[in-house]
Length: 334
Image (cartoon, rainbow, N blue to C red; front, side, top):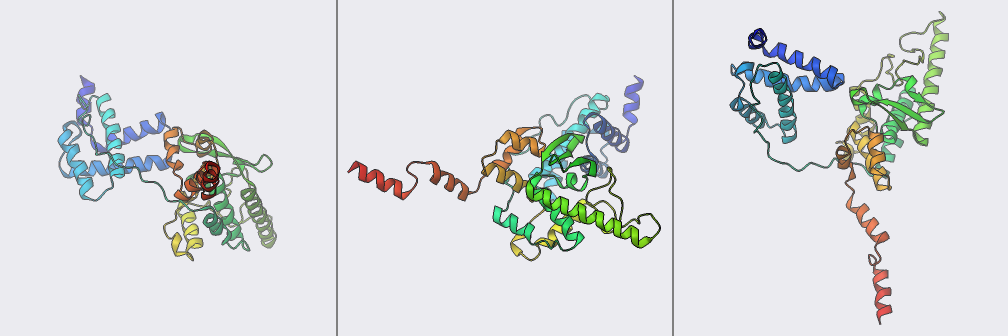
C-alpha cells in the first residue's frame, strides 16, 4: 500500500532520472545514447507539463496528442517512432512501479514508411576525398589517418574519436573497438589505413620530442602529450582528444572544394565501407561483425547496390546479357 502511495507522489523529473539510471545499468547504454534517449523523454515531459498531465494521469489521449504535436513540429516519421519507443520504455517503468495499471500506448501504431537508403560515394570519389588531404602537416596526417580508418574500418565517429593507443595493435594490424553498450569487437586494418596511421603516430611522437627539447624542462606541455597507452590516438593542436564535432568540421573542410560533397557526413564513410565490401562480394555476416551490429537486419540496409553495379554483375554473369552473346546464339541457331 505504501509503495502505491509513493508512486502517486512521483513527478516526471524523478521518474525519468530513475528510468535513465536503470537503462544505463541494465542495457549498458553509452553516454551518447543516454543523452539522446533522455532528450526524447524530456521533450515528452515538457509536453505533459504544458498540458498539466501528471504521470498517474497519462492515457492514450495524451500520447496521441503528443504524436500529433511531433507531426505538427514537422518531425520525420523515423523521429516520431524514436520518441514513441522512448515513451513506451518509460511506460513499462511506470507499470513496474505501479504508477500505471495498464499500458495506454499498447494499441498505438504509426503508419508504415519506406526505410530510406543512405547516400554513398563511389570508390573513385571516396579515394579522391582522401587524397585531397594535405599530409605535409601534423594536422593533415591526423585527418588523413582518421578518414582512412573511418572508411577502411567502418568505425562510427564516436568510436573513431574515442580510440585509445592501447586499442591499436600495429603489428597484428587490428583495432579493438569499443562500440555501443561498451561491446568490444576486433576490426582488421587495411594497408592504406595502416600506413596513414603509422605516419601520423610517428609525426606526433616527433612533435612531442621536439616540444620537450624546446621547453628544456624535461616535461611535456599540454599541446604535446606523451603517447601513454590510455592516451587518445587523435588529438587537437591543444593536446585534447578529438571530438565528434571536430572531426565533422575537418571532414567538411576537406570536402569544401567539391560542391557535390556538400551533403557528406562522418557516417557516410562507414556506409561506404559496408557498401564497397558488399559490392566486392563480402559475406553479409562478416560485414555485420565488423560494423558491430547486434542484429543482421540493421546491416541489411547497407546491401543496396547501385544500378550500375547491378548492371555490371548481370552483364558479367548472365549468358545472354551482352549483344555479342545474343549474336553468337543467333548464328548457332541458323
